[in-house]
Length: 98
Image (cartoon, rainbow, N blue to C red; front, side, top):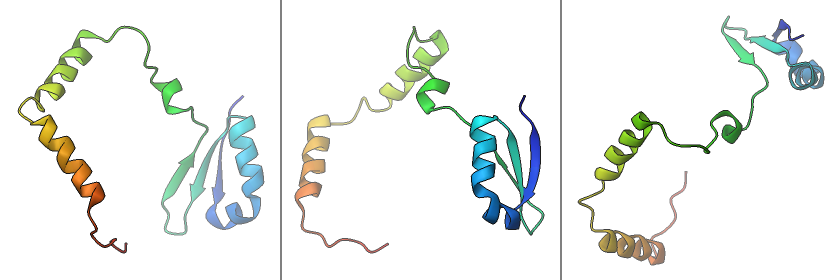
C-alpha cells in the first residue's frame, strides 16, 4: 500500500537510493522539505503516452479545437514558409552562446 512520508533535503542527499526505491517499487509519495520551508512532492509517474493515449476516436470538443488550430494557419503561404526554413538552415550566422 502506498504511503506518504517526509524527508528533509539534507537527508535526501544521503538516502537518495532508498527514496527512489520507495517511490518506484512501493509507489510511495515522498514530500521533500526544503530549508526555506517549501516542499516538493515526488511520486511515480507514467509515460506521457500512457497517461494520454492517442487511440480511439477524437471527442467532438477536441475535434472542434483541432479545426480551430488548423484554421489559424489557413492564411500561411506554406511554400514560402518551407523555403524560409531551409534558407535559415543554410545560413552562415554565427552560433549564439547561451
